[in-house]
Image (cartoon, rainbow, N blue to C red):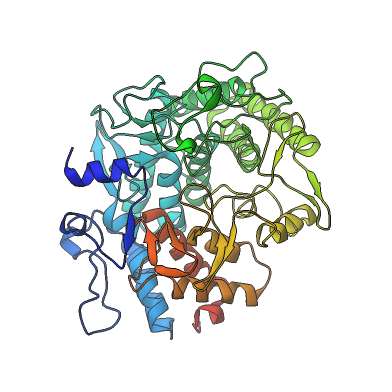
Length: 484
């Protein structure tokens, strides 16, 4: 392991960068920053020969937007951010005649099921006009299927069997695993990519016998983590100074009342849950189980497995209706972040996705549902303990980095779930004012100083920002200073 890699690992997905104080080692792998040049808005993309993957359809979209956009800085940010996953994180090849795609998260040389799906998600609409792009995403579905068959409880994987910095965690590690934190959303994202690809392309090829077997693994894992018959086969502990990186009660997590919800021992932030019924992830599971049931029925002609997915989705949905609501004086009934099935509730949100804020984006709740709107108002107020407002901006923070560090992804989600053009414009202004001159999104920035940010190379945040800008260009071009 190189010194730089050890640094990233030791920070556990946190790379604190103050005033762009990047080392030479990081600059060799991260997007190139040209801040020293006098010319404004110089492209920060790698040279063409150094790009990992190029899509002719995505390049066409970038040119289209740059030509239409009258805001030079916004056009520059879009050019840098939207292709960042393709430019810097994609490793595509053919193995035994089948496409295989390994997508790293950015500054960590490992693939998260969650991040890899989210990183390529905005490219799905371009697959119909770009066969190579379509093949690359087909390859990612194949790779995710392999990963689930290796271990459905793992959140992050190596490309091969090289082992991990976390191989001494107290859990059942395998050499293919980078990390083994059980998170419901990891499996949900794999189902989301499969369904999204199928709907965008109509192509059934990735959904073979292995894929169908992976769905049985997902279903079994979800059932185990309903914990109706004990805690199941999973536990996790780590020697660490960070409380959120290990799990109480000898790795089992807090007790739950088995009411039909699914336990998630970790959040999408890779932080341990306080109460294991993580509500946004259960909403996500309901939606993706139903989508997958449709695929099983239509493509695989497997009625029994489709029914099993639907039955679990119905059970979780009913448990959400009964247990995942709580009344706040002066606010009304809202969706809690975590519960235990007894009487305990955790009222907050986190900057990662799925979150309570992001549920309409994931198709898990109607954007105009009164329950969601009340929840949204609560989350975007100082009643939420992880909402911060400062000189640089305002938004949702979280325990992963600290209560004063705002997540740009949450600002993007605020814009994507808004019914107000004024609020969307407000979010766009914040995103433009907090990239610290880099032209890229970051994991977080300090509420009072956008130059104090974490993770200079975080491809998911970059691509998500690009998704927002492209969607607005198609639907509300005036908000991104375009005429169509």
